[in-house]
Length: 109
Length: 136
Image (cartoon, rainbow over all chains, first blue to last red; front, side, top):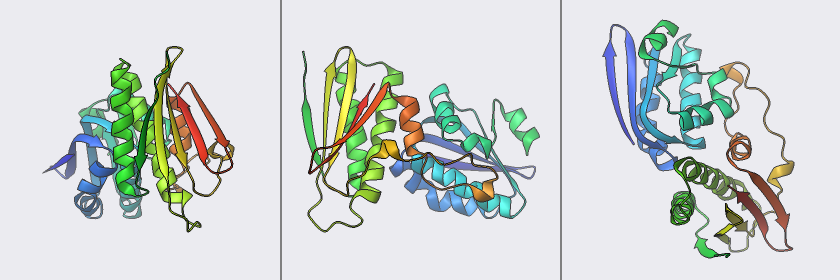
């Protein structure tokens, strides 16, 4: 799991690449959490994420809680059908909006 | 024809990755499609995560986790066995709706995911082992 961050025009885009299994989640946990606690408008780009399980979901939810405490916004976009099904089934999308496009994600933050 | 494989795991975090990769590889050998391979990886990861996290909290005997997989009636099946605290995951209530993010429960989503990504799940305790079977 690789993570790159782009900070432009007050929006922080976190691009995740690979599998968000337990190993993937642990690989990015420190950096991902650091971003969440220091930025108020965060968009997670899931276009190149091909798998997500509980530990990945946990990472997202914790980041979402941290940002919410600061009255910030966290949204996601670009999930594959399988990844979207995991996010929807687990109820995460009721807390962290999942959008269909970058533009929609920007509008939601 | 029924084919059964076996894998025995350490009862720690490595077991989670080992188990999901092993099960997915067996499913690929049975020519299951991409959606099924994803489901197998996910459901085995969730199941073994729960076992490693909760099954051995209150036991002191040497932990045993074992996996077997087989292909039967056009279905791919995986059984996860452990000798931890007897626990029927099917009887567990799913966590309620998340509500606000401030109230979001961490964890507890595993069973909801497993139900959504399997054709069937079964649990029994054989006197020594929890046995949780996933059918894809």
